[in-house]
Image (tube, rainbow, N blue to C red; front, side):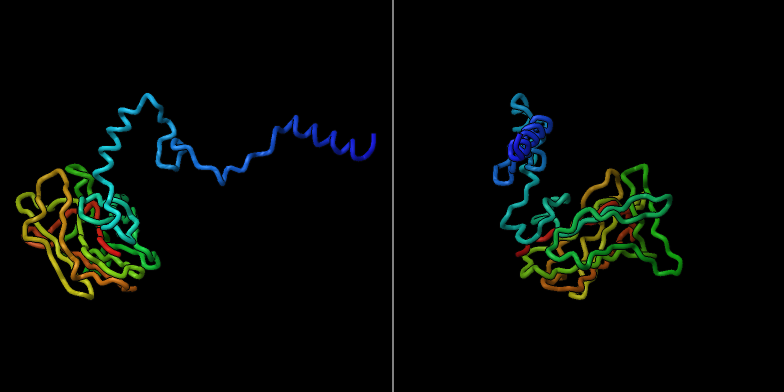
Length: 242
């Protein structure tokens, strides 16, 4: 057998043992049921009724593309207009509240930090209220929450909404919250935040306190009257921006 014949025989033996080489499908459209393409891999034609119901439910959470603009964080859990620019959650670590970064839908992520800080030395954020709700960080007269962001890449902000998920941490009195940035200050209505479980979303319009194309945004959040004390499970910033 000549060298060429031996080479062909070896290639044929390899193909029989290993199977054909993988096909390049990079240029082919994905099937609608392919995971990662917006469909559940376990879906089938028999589930069309359930899919239709889920589609109708999800439609209410889909942000309007014209209002979301350059913000890519998806629908706002609070129900505020626009899309999620930033959202954090407070988790329990013993008696301490720690930050969980859930979403950053801003164009620039170079400045992305949140925390609770006290006015006294040795302050530690307290995790409270784990039984009447999801629990969260205690926000009262002894502390504040800072969100450090950048709006670089945002040319115009039509509406900015700051929301918290929680309740007033007072058995008899509702509360509120207010905020401060380098652009100004704002607050919700007094007693907006109910002291009654379950937790709910409470929102305030901070459009005039947030500037576009700002690489040094600092949002400071404090508890307000009447209770002056809140338990905060989540904080969300929603924007209509371009």
